[in-house]
Image (cartoon, rainbow, N blue to C red; front, side):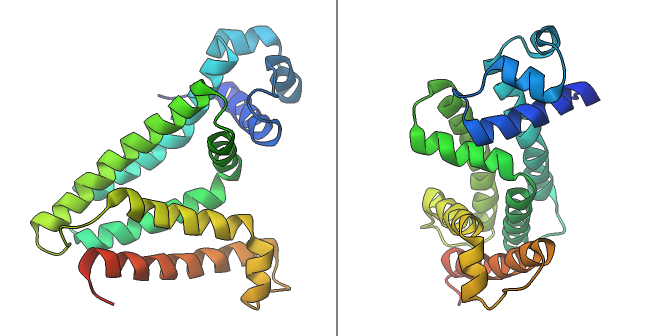
Length: 209
């Protein structure tokens, strides 16, 4: 689905507020004031706060879904290369969509809003099916082992990447990266994460060190 500039501006504003104040703690009036639009415009474009949240999920997740689908259909990449591309794309997404990622983490920890949890589960299930398709391709070609727990595999990537991002200053201290600019630090973190997670995935998927 394509959104116009005004819709994207409202979604960006709502996303930031949902991340900082929580979904339940954010009102439509809060969003309207922060976005400098009237309440009627939000109602016209999205209908309700719940539908606005749904639009944010669609907006943020659709591009990643298209990337996954494109990866799976790419005949020039091996299954392992596709998994490595998936790792890079996830780490890039985590860095570039920090407000959205905060919403995902906070709402799952609180587990108090069925609507939000349903959105998160739908997103996870859709991505998991695509990743399963990718792993099955590798298994059919004999390059991946047959005893792969996809849920734990993806939890390994998500858990490591999120933990490092949430404790990036401590990570910087332990890795000797103090003094770097925020931009330089994030690039360094992305590189270290990518290399580390790829090693883990290769070991799990192929039984190779």
